[in-house]
Every structure is written in C-alpha cells, then in structure tokens.
Length: 552
Image (cartoon, rainbow, N blue to C red):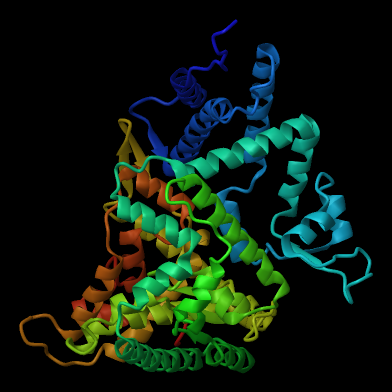
C-alpha cells in the first residue's frame, strides 16, 4: 500500500462527545444555577479532552511510530495517549500546589536510597551526576555527607511509578517524548501571526537569554539616571521598612518574644534593587555564548542550542553554592520583570529594574502621594510576605523555623479566619457575585485559603502607605483630598476587567483575589479610607467587625 497510513480520530467529535457526557452526567439545564467551582471542573475536563486529542496528531507529526505496522501503530498510539492521560491525572492540581506551598508542605527531604525506593524507574544517582556533574556516592564515598534531595510531592511521584508499572517502560518513554515534543513545539515553534514579530522574538529571548536582553535595554538608560533611581528606591525602601516595624510593635495581641522575632526578620530582610555587575558586563555576557553556534537561517537549531545552554548553566549553579545575585536575578526573576518577589529561603525582596524604571519616572515631578505611594505599597506588600501565614515559618536567615510562639500563632489564625470569612461575604454582596455562561447563571465562589497571604499583605501594606503619605495637604487642580488621591492611586494600580471565563479561571488558579475583590478587600479594613470617603459604620466597605491584623 503506497498511500501513507495515519492514526484515525475525529477531534471535534471527541470534544463534543466529552462535553455532552459531562453535561448529561450532571443533569445540567439552561435555567439551573451553577457554582463556579463546578464550571471550572467542566472547563478542565474539556481542556484535557482537547489536549489529549491533539496528542494523536503530535505522534503522527513527530514520526515516533513511523517504523510500526498499522495495527501495532494504532494500538501503541492508544497506549501512549492513555499513559499521558494517566500521568496528567497523577500530577497535583493547581489548588493543591498553592495550598502546599502556602503551608510549607513541599519541603520533603530524601536521600538517594530513599528516592530510589520511591521511584524505581530512574537511576537517580546517574541522573543527578549527569545534571549537576561531580560524583554522588550512596552512603558516603567521595562525598563528606550524602546528598539530600527535596521532593515537593512524593505522593504524586508514587502515583507516577504506578502509572509506569501499568503501561510499561517502552510506552512511558514514547509518551514522554510525545509530551516533550508537543510542549517544545508549542513554546517555541507555533505560528504567532496574531502578534507583532518583535514582541514574539523578545518574549522568546527573555526566556532563553534574559541577561543579554536585559543588558541591551538597561544600557539605553544613562548610568547617572540609574544611580539616582537606585538611591531614591533605597531611601523609600528604608522608610517603608521602618513603618512596617512600627506597625508590628503596636500589635498588642503578639507576645513580646514574637514581636522581637518579627522585627528582627523585617530588619534583616534584604531588598535587592541593584542589577548585578555581571549582567552589565559585555565581555562576560559574550563569553556565555562563546560555544553557541547561531545559524542565520535555522531557527530550530538556534532555539535548541540556546535552550541547552540555559539548562546546563542552571544545573551548574547547584555545584557552585548559593549565590544571592544568581538565585535572585537569574533563577527567580530577571531585571526586566515588572513584578516584585519575596524569597523566603533568602529572606529577600527582589525589585526588578523593569518595575523600578516604570515606577520612578515621576518621582521628581509629581507630589509623593501620586509618584511614590504605589511603589511604596509594592515594597511594603513584599516585606510583609516575610511575616504572612507562609513567611512566619521561615526565620531571618531563611531557615524553616517558626518565629511566633504557639499562643501568638493561634491568635493570628483566628484573625486570618476573620479575613477569610469577610472576603467570602464581600463577594456575595458585590455586583460581581454572579456571571452568565452558556445561558446559565454561575455563582462565583471564593478561595479564601488560597488568597489569604496576598490579602494579608494588601491590608497591612495599605496601612503602612496611609501612614507615610496620608498627610492633609490640598493639591491644586483637584477637589479630592490627599488621602482620597492616595487610595485612588493605589486602586488604579490593581484595577482591571475580567471576562466571565477569565474570572472563573482566576478564582481557581491564582493566589490573588480578582481585581475588584482585591481592591475592596484591602480598603474595607482601613480606617483612613473610611474617614477619607466618609463611609458609614456598618456599610459594605466599613464593616462593624474589622479584620485588621497588625497595629492593635
């Protein structure tokens, strides 16, 4: 038979069939009210069905089974798809991931013997040697101490072992090749015709060579301007730090020991602002690409070469010990990001150049309440993550160690429960409590445990900024008070509009409340906000029962 035989499947029919089965199994009708959690689960199932459907075409496109006879080819393709579906079900869900990281439940230590027993289908000693170099000996040998490995979700690793046992090593290898090929093609090779080419290329380069792109951009800014910006932000950061410490010291329900530990941690929090010198060193950056061959015509070879270089460099860091600059600026973030980070393991806040340059442009030409308050809020928010529900279990040196005594922690937990319950009531009383999707009324449900760390940092950061910039001084050209302008300015930083489906996805996948919920949630416990806008006691944004945490 000369005509090429292919794997047969009708993706549209499969997707529609999956959708029909889901709806019939739940007995949904157009007039029913549905919970957003149920809708999210439906969307997940549909997405998984569509994703699984594309695997058949990926297997065909990559030619993984080109040497197989047609009956064996079809049977193996079915096994590969079944294996991948089972793997995806064995992985932790997003909500499970967020909750585990919040509770610091992901730091499970194994030695090589224990890890080999946990998942037998990988030679861990050989794999780690290939990844990080050097020699790893089980039970001593060439190393003074046996290497320890952090396994985030050991239960799911056991599930993966059962999946491999069920399908066999041959199918598992083919399945992993299919997944790798599909993801690589999706990340680097898909047609981006709906985006400007320069945006697509810059985005890819920021992934593959972030330091080099950062160098090109940062050097368009005069060194004197960069130096001035760094000094302004460092001064602002220290002012914010002092205000956070004052807030902690005013908290009457904390024990004296707990106050001292929290203050010590905030005092020793490193605020990373200045871009490391090696990122601004042209010779150093060129040396990193010395052994990479860039073809003027072959895009795929270029991407593969750059990705291999990036991965080798990343694993080489493990043998080089902990470097603050490399970990903060090259593993966690890069200088062109516009989002700040708190790193518990280093007790460090990272403020990337992209965020600072965008935020400091008006420092010298506008009143501080307009120019500096939004950045001060970001800095306070990140510092406060060091003492949120997750950060309280890390000490000032970045070690897992509780900094609150049991009594203080119990009191904090009750206050956080108040915050959780209030956020749920806030959504229920809002105009955005429902959305309409597929002719059905969908009631939005919150994930307060998932967002509690961000809500805590928002509420307390707003107090800090209100103390720093809430002075009573009229500004020309507006009838708004300075305090009102402060709150308007902060709100504008986080306001936005989400479509119905985006709202559902955000509620289930993000550690942040949605835009309107986040803004309302941070101002409803601010006495300064209630005073500035004359909110009656007992109104929606000035509740009688305040869930304020620090400072009283």
